[in-house]
Image (cartoon, rainbow over the protein chains, first blue to last red):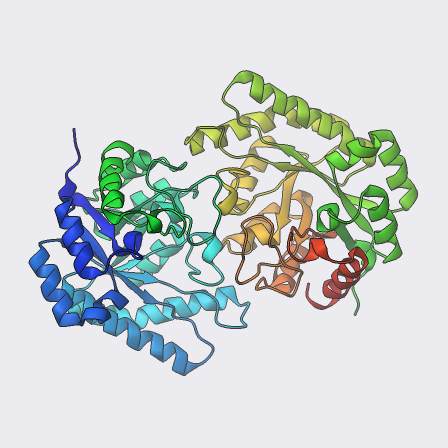
Amino acid sequence: MAKDLAKLSINMATVQEQWNLAQCLDGFARHGIGGIAVWRHRLAEVGLKEAARMIRDSGLAVSGLCRAGYFAANDAAGRQRALDEFRQAVDEAATIGAACLVAVAGGLPEGSKDLAGTRRQVWEGLAKVVEFARAAGVRIAIEPLHPMYAADRCCINTMTQALDLCDALGEGVGVAVDCYHVWWDPELQRGIGRAGKTRLLAFHICDWLVPTRDLLLDRGMMGDGVIDLPLIRGWMQAAGYDGMAEVEIFSAENWWKRDPDEVCRIAVERYQSAV
Amino acid sequence: MAKDLAKLSINMATVQEQWNLAQCLDGFARHGIGGIAVWRHRLAEVGLKEAARMIRDSGLAVSGLCRAGYFAANDAAGRQRALDEFRQAVDEAATIGAACLVAVAGGLPEGSKDLAGTRRQVWEGLAKVVEFARAAGVRIAIEPLHPMYAADRCCINTMTQALDLCDALGEGVGVAVDCYHVWWDPELQRGIGRAGKTRLLAFHICDWLVPTRDLLLDRGMMGDGVIDLPLIRGWMQAAGYDGMAEVEIFSAENWWKRDPDEVCRIAVERYQSAV
């Protein structure tokens, strides 16, 4: 049985070289896709209020707002800037009605090798913004990123770490499960079960290519790599997740160079056949 | 206090574009370095017996033989070939008196997305060779590789996985702790403690560069990246490890292009200052 396209979302990053916000809203809707994930700088391009109006008018659901975090810094001023940014992102997520605000922890501060200390700073930073997000009705989705980003992008690298944070932070905080980042983790199934329905806030899909030619910009379309996406989707469903599946593909040499309508068409096909 | 160079080893891969076995043995000894890690194809180049004689004559200790494993395959014949190869590697390790045989699990068989099944095959493969290794007096060092290699090189990606294997396999099996592969793991300290003296069979050092430009061939010299090597070395020592520290750097664009004597000199310096 065909999957419901209303539960398919595409992250703007997937066609970021081809389409702006207006074009994404129009294009995704034209392909019958039910949702969009938005980046903050794309909201800034058209202005928050106008962006919110455009999104509302499009009828698309917002599966997530990308992103805030990067909590650790070498001084108090840097840490404060991150908190201010995060609160601003919360406001934006509330304004556009995003299903969640994606929190990416950030990596080591410049010159630091203190991974444990950096992780403590992330914990402390999140603790300082969680009440603000709760009051705004915005759910924070902590996204564990692949360990190859531990140094420079995100020091939260496993579901276990993310869920330990959730446990400490309480209501309104959950996880974004991005298959690209966590597919290798032997604890993944357990982590999804531990998260449970109320903490599974997003499900990101793409594929891990063999070989992978770039650490950042060589993600594959679902079905072109080695991730058993139906297996992971089954774990999400068994845990009660009924949100959207969001296609997020960073691909400088392939998908970013293609006709964006072709990207949407193939994403829809693969959502049906390979997820 | 200066560290004892007798406890420093260099993996031949670090100068693989510059020096063959004879040159490595000569060069490392000239720099006062106490050990070498050897690759199997380098033994084949000169013949096993001759290689063993050369190594013995050099006075260098062998911190490890690289490598055997790649257990999973799509058919029984492929799995059998891996086992035969492994036993041959055991014989070679015994012949050259290697402190351990490094076992790299291997990734998914061609066309497979069955990660859990592949991991089971690794488990079953190791179980079939462990008695042979034990009888030969060769210790098997399971090396967890970074999760970015889970698909194509090694589906054992954490100390926890490796140690669960050790628990199941019993005596004569331990782990190779390569900082490059495990530095990001929030369970690393616990894993090293869990391993304990008898199962900590190797300690590989290099550094994680920011940015990392290639998934395979852009490792850094100790001190040039973000890994807190003294911290991890301290955990190893606290757990009772008193073996060698082995420098293993794959670096197509930098260290493989330098004068190998310079590489040795800097490795010695950094062993003192950054490990």
